[in-house]
Length: 627
Image (cartoon, rainbow, N blue to C red; front, side, top):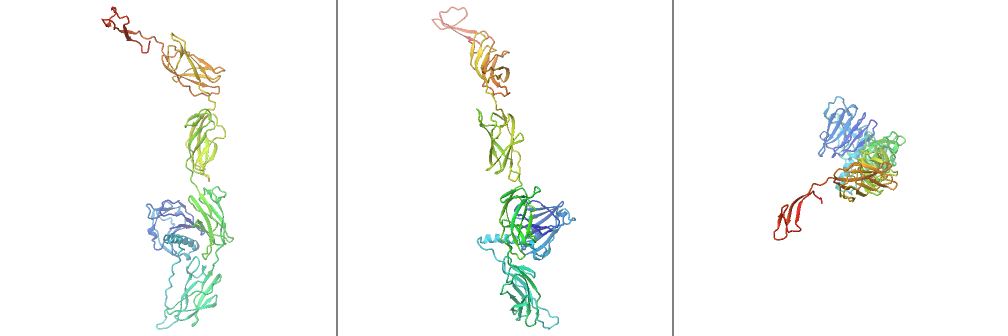
């Protein structure tokens, strides 16, 4: 089934329609537009299409074999003088609905008014295009299924007209039958079948069929001259096919009974066997910006309503194709110029070409294809997957939120293939790169300033559709970061035990002297268990010495050191140096026992005892770890 509309200027627009899909873009109604569905012979329109009014919109639901009905929404249909029609493959044209403000909301009852055959309608030419499109699709599918390599099947054999008998005005009176031409048949070219007087045909030897007095001879007259004769059979039927091909242009036929001289009525045919010259498609333009912008071959556009222009034979019907499928038609003017603007083409790729058809149905050679891609959808959100530090002493991948001394880090990630990725720093663009294969990498040309940075990226496709910004990747850039201080010695210079301490040692000096090296003239900040306990200035050679002003409390102290240079940049903390401060005298030890283990008499001795053991064993308790 095809769906199209014919506007008040008889311009034809096809809408892509798949009965197995339930997605269809809405159509904006226009004054006087006729919406036409093609159907197969014997199909009951009321059984295949249902209508419903919602506000001023009309919904046509195609009852297909799919799980959900396909719907066509015609917006504001009931505000305009539109109508819904059907066209059968045999050319029957019917009216099913006219826009009427009195139609109530809800389900709409469709009528089934027969308007005649396609060739009798004012819009016959465009209906012919619709009918041909439906017939070609059905025949192509059937031919492909039966024998894909076969030539297109010929037209079915036409039925000969039934003989009707002349009536007598008086009983028992005898009258000769007046000869007549009852049918004409096109037997050649693209369009074959029955013709009516006034038809245009590409058959130079059309078949004439008629009635006459049985067994008489009829003269065939062409433009008033006898060109041949034919004998009526015993049933009163006759048929004739010209022996000499007819000339191009208008031809007038009638027959005459040689015996009675009675003649038939006139029939006229216009012979046109010359196919139109090849039509051209000179331009396809995007008009969304207000000024037409040319869409190059194989180009992309955001315009769902592109404008096509070209040249064709004057007054011919220009058929617009997407590859081999007709999607619209428009008449060329007296000078052969034509222009067509699509009502709506869904996103996708279109191989556009045109061909001209004359009134006889002769179709000229198609134009060269002009392929375009319509893309109105924004690209998917790009991603920043990695940021790489490749400068300074510490290199490698950076975590989101990290601090780095690399002021030109390398960013990489993914985006829609072919999209332009724009990188932003705190909302300001700093560069762009194309994701040729769906991946991208970017390194700033100019060094980034020190401080906090929040980086995002957007993707813009080749027609300008822009994605949402990526998730942010935050970095802090500190280029002139000093090195952490180096602790060279910690000196205990108080109490009975003095000297240099190793990390982890115990000391009774609550103000040990610490010395080391750092960046020249920098400030060294000293922390104990994460709390600052003081700071000292390094000399011109970077040497520094620090003694706490306030004694350290007894216990474990994890000392760390940070360099703060003149630019205000701080180093990472140094590795910790652990000092255990103990300034309290231990409790007096106790002697728990004295053991005699020599001589005849051994055992534990009491205070004041006499013993022959010159090396008795003493044991007792004292502060843990004490000597």
